[in-house]
Image 1 (cartoon, rainbow, N blue to C red):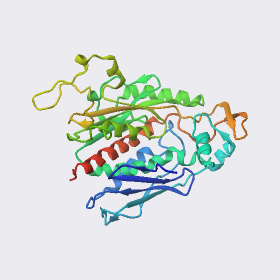
Image 2: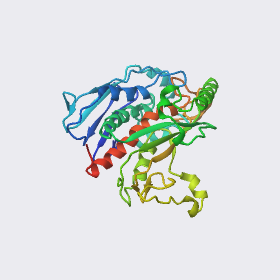
Image 3: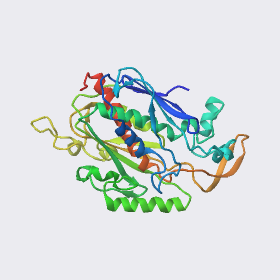
Image 4: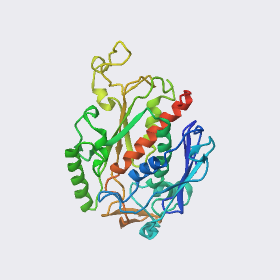
Amino acid sequence: MAGNTFGKIFKLTTFGESHGEAIGGVIDGCPSGLKLDFDAIQNELNRRKPGQSEIVTQRKEPDTVEFLSGIFEGITTGTSIGFIIKNTNQKSKDYSHIKDVYRPSHADYTYEKKYGVRDYRGGGRSSARETACRVVAGAVAKQLLKEVKINAYTSSVGDIFLEKPYQDLDFSKTESNAVRCPDSETAERMISKIKKIKKQGDTIGGTVTCVLQDVPIGLGEPVFDKLHAELGKAMLSINAVKGFEYGSGFCGAKMTGSEHNDLFNEDGSTKTNLSGGIQGGISNGMDIYFRVAFKPVATIIQKQDALDSSGNIVEMQGKGRHDPCVVPRAIPIVEAMAALVIVDYYLHNGIYN
């Protein structure tokens, strides 16, 4: 299986399955001399881990990261940083009923057709549990990006949208509620929606908005390595993501040029920021903001038709512990992938302090 590595200079390779002994990763290209804050890294994992509240999966995993190499007395040595996160709460029997059944909208069918074998326990390599490894690497990347602020939050659940622009939000309130929406009134409505859907044995999707501030001018290349293209790839590589837009996004397609153009101030900043902080594929110093759409979780606790390995349509019902909405736990993953993209460009441009 190819495609397990992300990045060009600051590279992350992940390994492991949802119900294996452990998941883990190797970070290549991290500069030497970085004093790591291990509590900050673990805190990022705690934001992603299952079992945090009644609106997420109740799988109980401590998600404690163990570093194996590349660090001496708390400081990076410049060599490969290896780490593992042990799986401690597998319930593989919850998946025995799908051993010979392909779940609708899962990777079961495509995996088996491509590789001739699949790990049906929790989806194996296709499980979102793999994203814990991204969060570890992203937490390291954040510590290299001391001056860059990266804040993601839940901006919609189903048909409930946070209408306020990000400039009017207090990001310090994002962690104040289970759904990770920085507006308390909207958060309450989102939580109620998720609880209602969960009681029905169903799931629901939503969106995450991410804002990057104090990004220097000049990150990105103008043809195939555009900054927004790399951000798009990073976000679309996350499980359950179905869409990505930055700046004005699809709304910009409804506007005229005179409405959409960001006029300059004398210092090179712009009066508006419909460009989303990126022009010609290169950061322009303004805030970079984008939105990521997550589909409803495919596993639902309702009976539905599925296909078995003999080509028969059979009735199945989801079992096990699953998120009724992945969006709240996706917040640190989106931030981590954004950090990995930015730190890669930092190193490409020779920026590191």
